[in-house]
Image 1 (cartoon, rainbow, N blue to C red):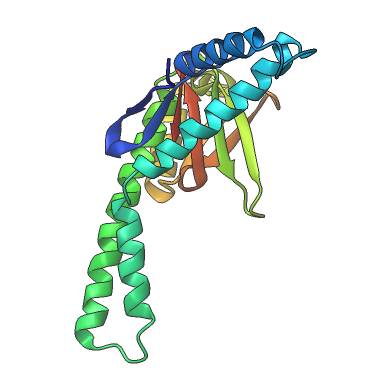
Image 2: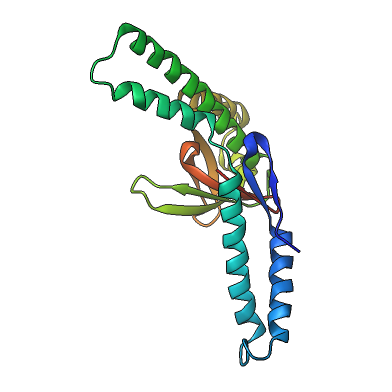
Length: 204
């Protein structure tokens, strides 16, 4: 059984974790029967190697199948115009149009990621993002838990107003509850590269 990759909105790859695990177990059982190549190996050791291989294959297929996004095309077009030694009024007008379109494309991307996270409500979601120093970090969050940590009689109304204001000013930031730190945090949706939720892994 091969690991299945399912496409969702904007053709983003979603990994079927159950299929990948099944494929790893199937491959491991086949290796166990090979008494020569894996003599002395434990089932766990063989499984770890096969799981790593199948994950790598699934990710490679996802990257190969994933089309260039509209945002990437816009970034390239803007970069080409900015690289010109001398820009014309038409070039500058075009850059304004491209940047406006890029802003809309990014907003759609933010909405998709926000929706995937918030849809899990009280369930734990693993979000991987790139920090300012370039390193990658995974944070486990509970989307619905944050509201229980806003105090006061008018907490619900105050929180709704605060969220609306924050979203309008900083559409790329999503307030979340960090499960490990047991504290509120903000995630920059523009740097999110992976969301594991509902038994699927969404890669951006």
